[in-house]
Image 1: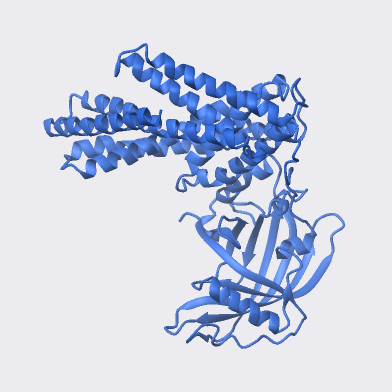
Image 2: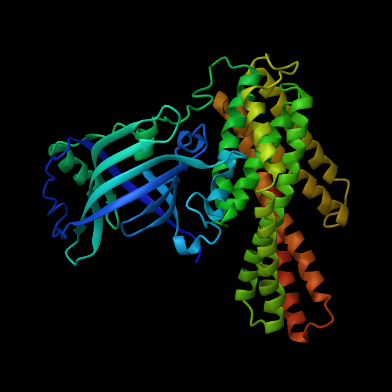
Length: 497
């Protein structure tokens, strides 16, 4: 079995030991509570020696007892108040033969944080837990209320033993209204806001890392703006990395965008950070983009051809060629991506990117006002896009050279968009308008480029001598649909210009 994923949304409170729990019957209309169940939970928490996981709001543990014994990784989630939990049952952790051997499925999820550091036990926590389930009128679980008596021992140098009591209220099927009502009831009963974000943080005293840049000053330097933007996209790269490994929806695409935006900043502001520091990182990001691009391009092609085939009565050999074989190739590309994201080369790139943000070597333009340097960068990018558009007039419409020039315009528009977006913290409307204009161009020509690439693929499939005549006929219809889609996209582009 593969790891299971869930979003944990809960309230956490400190309480005095022995504080009686309130009656939770009637939290919502018709709700009742089940009979309390008691468990002894014993967990060992793992982190690096300098607690990088805890500082990045992540917890990794091996726990026995209760209803979900196994390995658990919790990390921030996009759901307000929620955390994403990935669980691996002991039976599924084939490589975790020892109690201190973290399963590969979870180790890969934290590589962007720990890099080459070793994961070691940092705390043991024993919890006497009493669980009461809140049920709706039909007996379906809405939430679980946990009364915990906790004993924790830090295994870090100078660590000690700590004991406390706390309450947790976790949604299992209820909504935000139930959470709000429970918060009020539990506070009235004597609960206090939790003094720490997790049991582990309380045990070892680790606090989350502060952001490198909380807010950009009004009179920021060019280097300050570049650091600010790089940090934001670096964080996005880190956030999408584990999701891309598990092939979550749109994750590869978003990770590729983050890598491209970092590279765009380094190339759009060449005099801000010394080239001997910026250029190697930009080169490595280009290679990362190619690996991500192989997976993403296959995703796009699969999606397009699934939609096209849905209109047709396609023979089995065509479905195999366009869908089944492509899915196999997509899985192979994903396998290559996962390997690439686990290499020392990728981890070195992350280290170099951190150094670029935290301790850059200033270039000759580093101390110029950000507003000036951004105006030059956006203006230059806009000029390059419009020059490419003027060059388009030299070619006959729909000729190979004309199509290739549209591809160049799309790339220039993308560069302009990313450069203009990097200036967003400065709140300059003229630059925002340039970015919006570039986005329209990129969107329309991006659709056209997708059809060009897919039509070439359809032609390759059609050239297969073993393909049935019915398949070739359907391929012709599909090509016509793609051609029409491409022409509509170009028409939209022309109208927008």
